[in-house]
Image 1 (cartoon, rainbow over the protein chains, first blue to last red):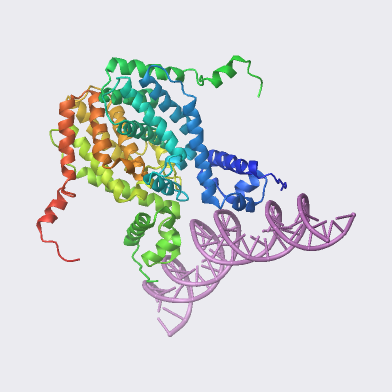
Image 2 (image 1 turned 60 degrees about the horizontal axis):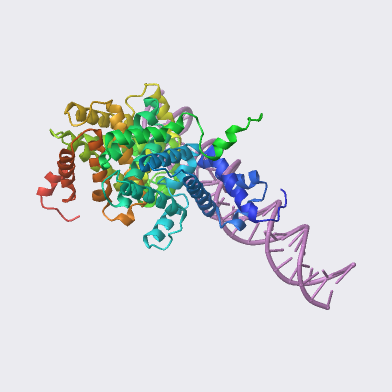
Length: 241
Length: 241
DNA sequence: CGGTCAAAATAACGACGTTATAGGACGAAT
DNA sequence: ATTCGTCCTATAACGTCGTTATTTTGACCG
């Protein structure tokens, strides 16, 4: 065991190690002993840096929320509010697929370590507006408000519109990650995108406009990664790994 | 420990005990020792009746799927296909709320005991059509097909329509159970039902017809329980428990 | 009445989260 | 420069989990 005295990066090192183990081996791999050994420190460091495993899990989920916020921050804000919100949805799905177990930790029902119960209680009291998941929800509400401002959908409470959009995107992702859409083939073009068109049409958009906007948002799917920073890196010749 | 030799009802007794503990105390209460003690048998019975805890969990989830099938079987089949499918959605939500942890076990991402992974692999091979969750999915596909047959929505693959409907209902339920809609008040009338109207309107129904059908399906919400068998029992005077 | 075998209760094992204990490296004071 | 005090770390230990091995019990049959 290396005796690393600098504790600020030990915290993030443990979080990153836990996140990687969660992605590679699933929730059963999140063990104090395994994470500490993988990070090259003693098991006790988990209890001195965090309070225990629930707090480490909470920190892992918080990091996931922050990554989501960072991804939303990089999203372009065009004059097509519908396309913007579907780019958000596709980015949301990409992040979920990148680490399904982390997505489950963040938005699943099984509250490992009573994380969300505490957060949501605070949110109900309107105290913790800066909670990470509240930030991601705020992005969605603002995007829903732009739908109304742009005149693409009927005037309605943005929070209600956001809840509807989030419901179906989260439901699709959850079921897709569980494998329920495996028999459908390309479930994004068969389910998620038509579902989005139907949704915004039901909210008041015209079918033609909704179809065009969703198609515009889905264009970025064909070249696998083509968003801002990734596109810049693509211009350089790819060195051998 | 009572020495019950009859093993057929021991199986269901363990399943019922596990389901009850799951509902009352959450997933952390599902322990071989606790379930066996609560059922009044030795711990070993879990391993002789089932193979181990994963198999018991699988049996619990199977019982949940069967309860869902039974509930769908009792649903009325009226001439309003849209109202029928929303009655299914509301019944689905009621069952989920009755035992959120069981719902998580059945449809959540965290595969406790690698249950769904095995089942879905078999489903991909089209071998296990009789798998319990396949039955519930079949009900939804048939209900979606009736939407098309009745001319309420555009002609489309019923499996795709079913996937869309399931996505948003499951997403709403999952987020509601997690508490994300607590700040919205009556999220059923604010989110779930408008979401359903928007959905079927997007699928091709007229706003007026969709609104009327969803309203008809939601009528059963005001008297808390009023479905077939429960209504018959209501006519008798309720005896003291 | 005794022997045989299956099934159940109990004890034990490895692994987990967590806690207690012991050891060792820095800073400060003399 | 030495020594003491104070953290931080590594190691060991405890209780509990799922699971397995061992023993005990009880029923059936000759």
